[in-house]
Image (cartoon, rainbow, N blue to C red; front, side, top):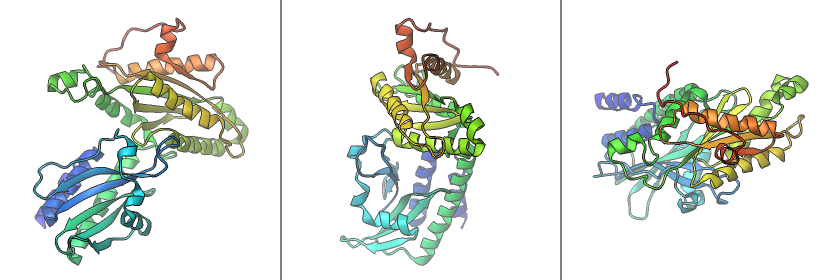
Length: 348
């Protein structure tokens, strides 16, 4: 019992979801000594992704291995296995019940559903030499309830109540983590990290609903809230599963994404602008959004990058709204002056 308590204490000691998943599979490996234990998430792809949903490995640990493996969040979705390839996992998610079956090699596969407050998002798979006993199954279910409850607490503190998108207070931490992946960043240099050389580029976009005040004035705040909720769904379908989507408050939204270059980022924001313009919002009809974006630079502070993107949004609104503007392109065209870079350390 003390071993279980120790693992639960470790599991709930982190606020990083990636670390939590690794800690969960490590704990179950130590407690059950199975052949393998893994967490798989079923990811829904955007409009221009593959036709099928895909399985993303969040954490997988095989007996005898010291370190869990996982798919990178920016993995090419087309290279991930289709969800339809694993019907047992889909059945488990649909039924929300535990499935046990014997495999061709004689080992036993036990699948547990992983759910949030909103939906079932994936599965936990345990492969063992013998059929998992009822006591062990109950223990795993109990551990998963604690895991679920702690994930719910994180969602409550990290997500916007209305839209389910990430909230403002989670932005700085994610931004600084992205900053550490940039080639030439202080974090990479200090760690001697060359994994991202010539690779990672991040872009920050600010999205503002055009004339949103008139929506609230004409239709009321309940309809205004419905517009915000529906726009958040359009954002999820327009961007990739690993792009970080935030609601900063009111009608202001933020996206932090990893892209190959500025053209790719512009294309993604233009896709959202187009999808919003052509979507028929109940009662309200058609609305539009103005978007400004900038590339995240080594040494940036969250406020500095946000300020550049926000200036591009104001330029978009002054130029007629319903458009996407790049801060770098505006500066290059002479439509905007580059401001002095803010310090990476800010005092409030």
